[in-house]
Amino acid sequence: MINWDRVDELRHEVGPEDFNEVIELFLEEVDDTISTLGMCDGNRTLEEQLHFLKGSALNIGFSDFASLCHAGETASAQGQADQVDIAEIQAAYGAARAEFLMKTDIRYVA
Image 1 (cartoon, rainbow, N blue to C red):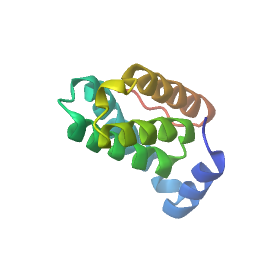
Image 2 (tube, one colour; image 1 turned 90 degrees about the vertical axis):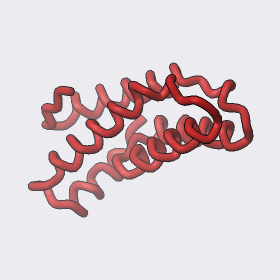
Image 3 (tube, rainbow, N blue to C red; image 1 turned 180 degrees about the horizontal axis):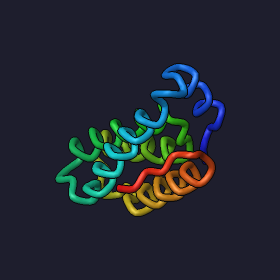
């Protein structure tokens, strides 16, 4: 679900003193996007949102969530946005987010 090697790599890249700030910004942006994902009006908009979420997820190590976003992005690019399981994507993010916060010392509250 989470690529902990990527999390450690990110912590090393930004430094331990800035890591929490980076994570909080990530969670804030993704929480906002996830909450409006079901309101996308068409293939292109959903594709763009899922592309953003995929990139964010890969940067932070949320690998399963990133895979679902990639699949949805691809489907949307092919004109099949109506076949994207948004609830599954939202649930995957929620699970990854909960696991991440439980296993780190970050205390983020949206």
